[in-house]
Image (cartoon, rainbow, N blue to C red; front, side):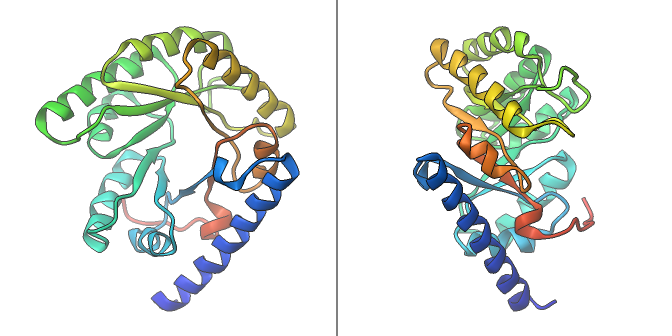
Length: 244
């Protein structure tokens, strides 16, 4: 596929996703401006990210630090004038915190105090070294199925983790993130997440973001208060293998 053909394909997919979002927002009585579209570009090349940037997107998500690091650098070479926001949405090991703090604007998958502490230290070091200019925005990932195999803090652990994050000067608590449980009703899951978000905002008014909904369930997420949907397949197509 030529670059022009790929651009046309991405433009068509983007228009379809935006229309789905607009319809979902109308059905929920919300404005489309209330819901950010986050392009999940994992396993896709930096050239696709560049084309999506040309089409007006400015927020991109990765789930593997090694792949993301190279892609962020390559994108900067392809589009030096662009200023995207890069999100880490995958499960993150503490030993990757230092590397992530150098390229990520947002980490959505903070699910333990030990990870938050590692990210705070790494961000402080990156700020001191001039590798970044601002504190790291973070979301607390919530497990909605009672297990932590796919990442996420239990609902009962969210308040304590949020308090710890809020006390650090190098992290900024922005809200919550979750993935709907496999095989479950996404509406029930997202309603639960909205309740957790509302309780969190009672103590942390700045934590307004609710990152929920993907290609298959974004309508349900929007109906239950999502402020950011994470869309990969519906935008970019089937998974492509790229070198990390």
